[in-house]
Image (cartoon, rainbow, N blue to C red; front, side):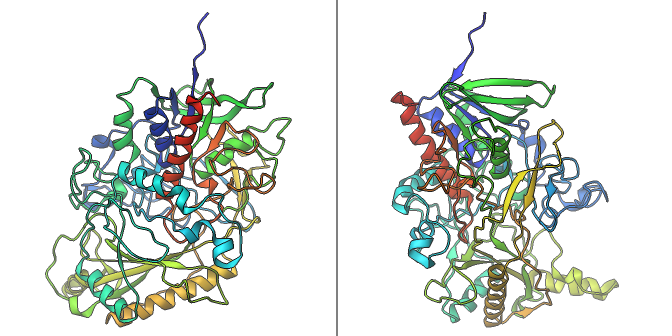
Length: 565
């Protein structure tokens, strides 16, 4: 009779959180099994980042109707470049409660959403971890401080490679070992000067994109197509940076096509003893066993797994004695950008300005001493300009013929676009649950239903503040602001920055996880993705997701070595 393998740790997911956790655990000697619901990716075959729109049958947009009706925030993600990466919602629907909105971006493949992420890598600051006590009394503090996480930011940034240079902004700590930042393009430099007239400073954007050779990886070659993948590993993804390292160690095993749907509990100890998963190639169910289980499947998936693992002792979902599992889901206050024309750049020569795939400068939050009676906390602003693969704002103008084409060419190098992210607040009434009507995914696993809405008073007030500040900066830059509509804040999930639902905290009665990402109820079960966030500051979350996963896995590896797990 074959002996059943018991791993030190089973890690669910191979993206930003799961990939980092698996790497840290295996690097410290733990025997690790990493389960990924999707397939292995071959960048040479699966990425099309050097393909131009005219090379696609439908100019990159896809055959009309092929993707169904895409929710707001998906229309720019799923196209002919990426249709074989993302999960198309009409093929795997999820449920929305009446009046709810949520845009769930799913990418089932080795590397997860790090294959196509935005790459902005700002650190959260000291105030971000203690917003209730140090800012305004709303919400909850994190059960850790910036000082607790700072050394892990250092290690995570060293592992993934971050360009951007030092910054000295209040509550925006800098990467001590950053690679040189990328140069601003003409339009961005003009807007930077305009903002400076108002006393608003710009910073070099910290990007997980290499500005020079690093760790055997090539620097960015400025194709500007990071959202379609990177075939030179110049931007970080777990697929291209961590998986090659892990393949060289004997204590790491990766199993693809493994859709985990349930955590297994030891009936005698009530501790996690493994997981059950569906092999998506044959539809069969398998069980694997471990001394610990680490969920890093992404916010929604990890919550879904915990709910679907309910037992007699945990009838509301596994590790949910607090009753808060699925609650306090949040997201950035996100909105449509403002387009403008810089007259001084009209008619200049067209040059290749694709750059590193994201704006090289941004405006960190600067309103800490400007308290508002309409909204809490604050926002960051971003700006982008230059000639890229798109036709620019001139293509939206009416016209036809030679004069029309001349106008487009004149405006093409003169466009600039500004947008922003505001802090989204965490409310109990924004939550996710298992669909009570029995919706399942294609593998028969119970699916989720969202009760979420990003349209609340704080979000509208913050939106109006952001738009007002953008207009002021653009006018100070001499820009001609194009007509735009002040739409409601985007649905949660639309910019793929959703967080919360299994928040960490000191009190087991009001939170799911402790400060080491361990479930209060089941200490050998960890959740290391963005579901652990108690709050969601204006900064992009991915670096902090990875850093928390690094810290949690480092602590778990020590506990395994000491025999405490």
